Length: 506
Image 1: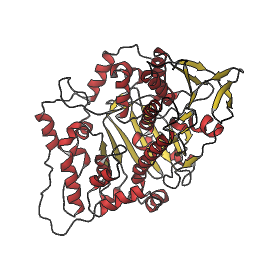
Image 2: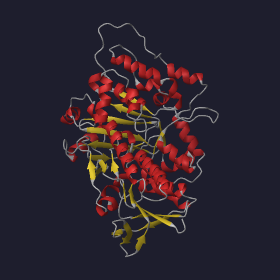
Image 3: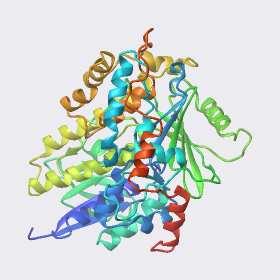
């Protein structure tokens, strides 16, 4: 590039600053100028406080170590998601969805075989947490850190304060040369072609660029309001449209997992940080009023008579018909949202930014691969949506119209319908996931955790040949010990991070 290629990111928050950091890092050797514009008058949602292991790769790419950012963001390690009360009629009160690691290569086959055997009506061991190393770490509240000499990489996510993470990422982006402008955008101007030409601030200043990134949240200032890109709601598949948020004091022992507890009209998250617990209640306003939801939420937290204020948040669940149009890319809530279950929000943000960088470079900073990008990202959103929909479709709760309506919902994608058909016909689910090329969304291990965790099995056969499964009590734990690996407690890992922190705490 002979002259600077100018990119303006509209909106801060975690999504905006992730985009700015990745652009600045990936294009450090190119003549690219990146500016992030945000308004102090416009708040951010700031409740996405859990991640998948994808975020670990994000920090690794930027060369940021855990002890550099985690203490500043009150962050903790996350190895598992525990689901309480989603399928009580199956006799399973809770199940786990551990993050899978390379070590699980040695035990996942046993899990798959046992699940298929159980679908044949034979009594086998199918508790997901028992087949994966992070499942064992979750039960023992151990941290996922290993010695440098350990030959297998461990996968884990994080819990964090999203407001503090945004501040940390902003500081890091500035070090990479990103320009930060705090101002309110009053107008958006376009070229005759329809592309965006410049932003006009409330002070009358003109901010021109070659490319724009819309991180303006649910309002979609650039993509929806200016370019008129249609939003495709997922209301037929996912009923939830509202959330309540309220923190509670931290617990004596900081847990290493997120807990998702099913309530009468939705579910509640429990996210342990080092200084507090993040709690939220996700529900559908079609089935309960916000006042009724708050009462239920407070009762669940034991905070019914507490004067602390709950935040009420609307959710816009769905995604854009196009994620990249002309010279504008949507990232984060302005692009789409598939509710907080399974913590997919930042995962999708990161995947979308990374793929855009690849396709934009391949097209020599042109729109050559725009259609391909839009198709791939829409497919990604829809397949992630399917996995979340399955949580509601497969529930066995009988305590409210909400759960019965979710179970009776017949609006399923062809992909999800085929997966469930293969499962209930006792066929090879892993092979079907490979056939549909779904492993980049949620892999076979994740689908087996969900279906086995819900107890989605036929009745046991009358005659049982005796235990012949591939699971032995404490089998995975013995395997861990056989590797000579002794995991430290989660609390010890956090204390070590704080003691070796590279920067002063906020």
